[in-house]
Image (cartoon, rainbow, N blue to C red; front, side):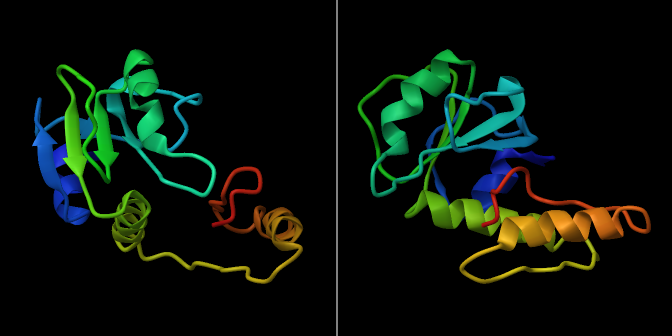
Length: 143
């Protein structure tokens, strides 16, 4: 768990709006439809080919989210929210993930290729789980 201020520092972001710099963040979200533990969640407004996460800020806010990383300023009011502006929300998410991963001295197995990554991941889990503690991505979230 990190404070929102620590996350701002990791992501090289700037405060756009501050409510509580010491608010604890334990969950990272990219989908406003899948809000869990809203009080300690940080929503990333990712910009993709078909969607712009900035369009879902108000929806996430109404779901109870009060911590946001955005890549462009928006004209909506989110009272009592912590909002960090970064150059690229996806790059910020990746920086935070890399920082978190570096906090542990664990063996990491990477599976690459165009096809078959999920099945290989699940097969390795079945083989190794009886001998090691395993952490793996859910479903087919392999990136």
